[in-house]
Length: 461
Image (cartoon, rainbow, N blue to C red; front, side, top):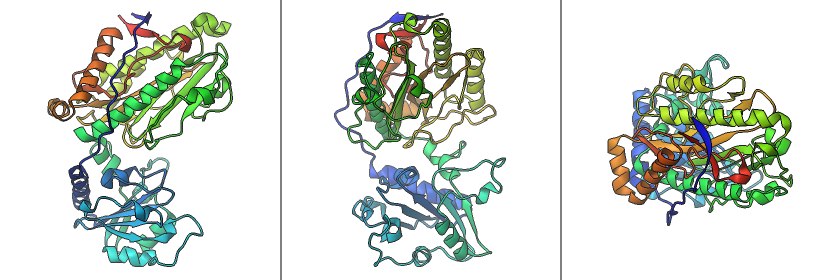
């Protein structure tokens, strides 16, 4: 049974500083990539990064390009080279990573200085790339065989770079899409996180979830989207997406940025804030209760929001080490009342530096939940009746006994926050979590369908 219940919203002590990854973590990741290349019989991996798609590079060396592009070249033999533009030469990675740095000025904005770079062909050849080799490339994604021909050779790097690599290796070599090294659902390196990385993501999740609920607490009839979003605080953390805030009809475009549009009583709303490693989103109604809604929504929205929250609960309660992706999908789909809504995307996904790195949750997905995964409860409903919105989006980590012990020992304050969140979800919201599930966000499972009474939330009895 699900009911709307007045609760005391939890408060969490904010960490005093953002955790940093030790250099040993980056060294291991670089070694893991070199080993993956050897396993795949590849000679080199060429990773292209830009401001939008820099997660692979940041994962490996801790820095990504600003304003510019960059290339990180890793050899199966352990050799490493990083090509940077004019301005990014001032933010190189830690010298302990033993990466050769070279300037390539065509990675800089147009019409900046170009007089000191070697040609890209010369740089690639000096890195060790040569005729007859198998070269992997990566930027951020793989492709679908039923949509794109020859996905093995479908590259997501710039044409000038792909063409140059193909010229160098010649007909006796090959240039391949190797993003699966990082995001393959069975063994992608970026799908599994250690205690240090989880600590970074927990800090980020606490930051954005606090901001979203701070904004929610200031909702009022007449507030503008810009004023509501002014309560978002990122503390300078790199954003994984633009801030989102929409009231009324504009909420149909859920990804929209804040405007001067104002909230009206009975409006739907949608909002989200994301930084690297975390995103929190909420969507519901600007109302005190169903009585503030239009006549058609007064009967529809209570059923819609309650059943939607049940799907969220089902997702949380089916996450455990060894859970099969398609089984989680089936459990969620089983509780959804299709006369009320359907889901527009996968029911949840893997989370990392970027908001969506991959998803094991597909109708035919046979990959399993593994220790070290960080995942997002991201179930987006599309109303089958009158327009209304719903979203309860937060992140969790999954950890076996060994990883939980490491987190407890290395980050005891974070461990205490996680346990407090687990108790709130179980004792107050009635959500039963597997022992492996560690809530990263302050607001996991917390949903007030009527924003003007934000302490009236759904609870399972």
